[in-house]
Length: 200
Image (cartoon, rainbow, N blue to C red; front, side, top):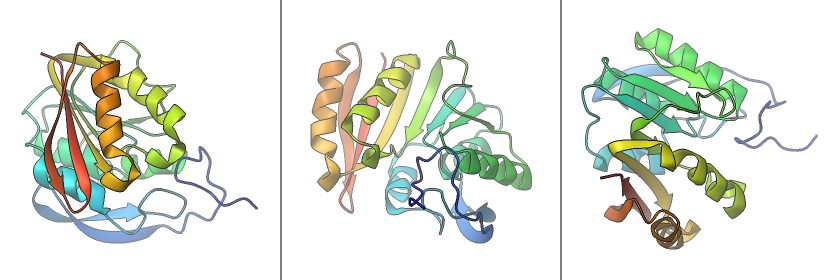
């Protein structure tokens, strides 16, 4: 059997649900994770960098966690801003099930969707993403070309990318690809770059 990747739509490996205690929106919580998804043992280093260095989400708006995994970014958004609409998008059905399970357990509202099921006309005030760099440059670029144009006026996207996996070249590509958006790098931490994309 071929090994599952976290970007596999239907992981074939046993789910092996497990509970992990993590800190989301400044408080300790217990979440469910499983095999066959990204970072099943808790919050990975890149996501931790984004959560530490990105500003808190606004009180309201429409937010997107792109490549959600089990949902640490989406859940943080929803817990911090209960008045917001939060979408978690991932190709992995098991990850989306975990997002729904975790949101219900934590008493917050997150809509978990595959890219195909996400409404194409939604504009996002905030996008947080630890994008799946290992899917390859072509797929990554297509993903960003699909979602970053959906930033609403004044909207911001925050992407965390490991420096040695091409963060600097990705930042240059973003600036070239989206001349109508402002691209900068507000923070570097632990070998990760935090890239900000803003629609004025």
